[in-house]
Length: 88
Image 1 (spheres, rainbow, N blue to C red):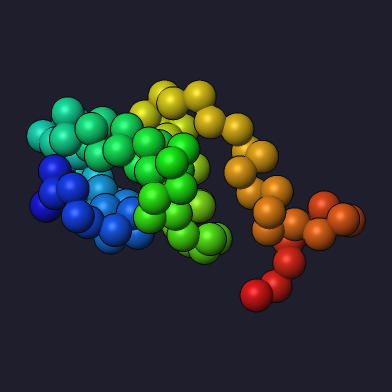
Image 2 (tube, rainbow, N blue to C red):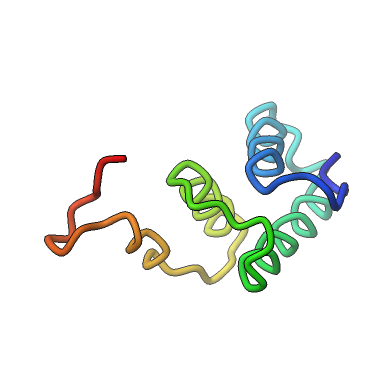
């Protein structure tokens, strides 16, 4: 399922989370890298982009965990002019 092209980003991120929490991430390391590259490509083309703090947080955590150079500025759209997080 990690390699499936039709999987939504949230579903894919949750699957990666489940695999890593089970301690099996090392067995799927290449698949996870391919999936994270696909998620980055989706963001760049805006395909399947979801404006959701949960998706953004998972994406941020996994990209940082897997040594991708990702900025914390991806959370700026969830902040107000006082730099506080906005409630939904």
